[in-house]
Length: 80
Image (cartoon, rainbow, N blue to C red; front, top):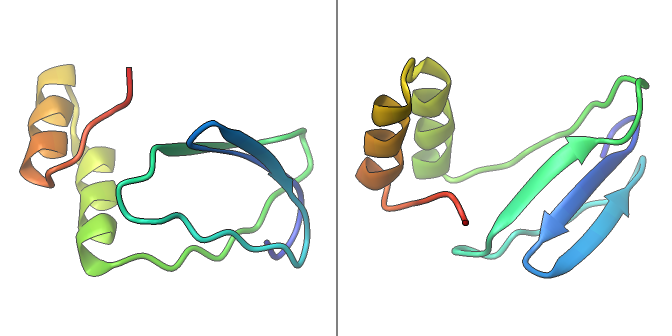
């Protein structure tokens, strides 16, 4: 974390990260994150090229069907 606060759900664990904190997400671990308040948050994320491509593709998928195909193409899924 470079600036701000971030709440992270990593598997069954929920953590709040602040400036200077870091977190490693093991491959295949269900996770999500959200900002905590209206304070700007700056995060440095280091990803494998495949994860970077997945994120980029998800941002350009316009429909639910396109997003579903994108998750499948990158051997990933949303947790229920």
